[in-house]
Length: 150
Image 1 (cartoon, rainbow, N blue to C red):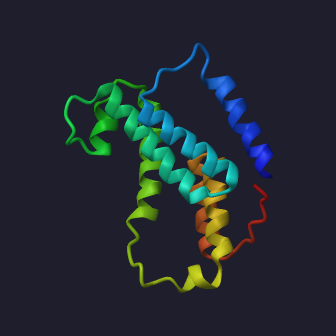
Image 2 (cartoon, rainbow, N blue to C red):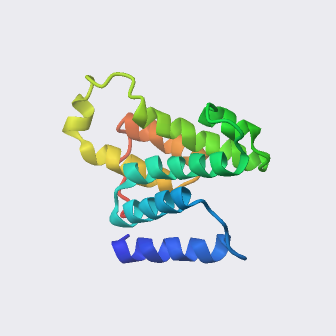
C-alpha cells in the first residue's frame, strides 16, 4: 500500500469512526496527527508507539484524577467497553515488546533479516491480534515467507 492509499485508509476510518465529532485535548490531537503521519509514511513501529501514546493521553485527559496511574491502570479504570479495554491491552503488550526489548544485544536476526521485522509490524497493524499470533509463530520459525505489500 502506497502513502496516498494509507492516507485514504485513515480518512475512511475517520469518516466511519468519528461520527458527530470528537473532542480531544490539544496534546492528544498533536499525537494523533503524528500517528497519522508515521502510518501514512510507512513508519510502522512509530505508528504503534504513537498510537499507544495517543490512547494514554486521551485516557489521562478524560478519566484520570491523578498523574501517577500506569497505562495498565488507566485502561482498567476507564469507563470504556470491556472489549475495547481488552483490545487496548493487546496493543499495549505488543508495544511493550518493542519498547522493553528483552535482550538488546541479541540482534543477529534483526541485522540479518530486518525485512522480517518490518513485515511483522505491517501485519500487526492490519490484522486482528489473534491472526497475528499465529502468523508471528510461523514467521519466527521461518516456516513461511510473508509477502504482503502494505
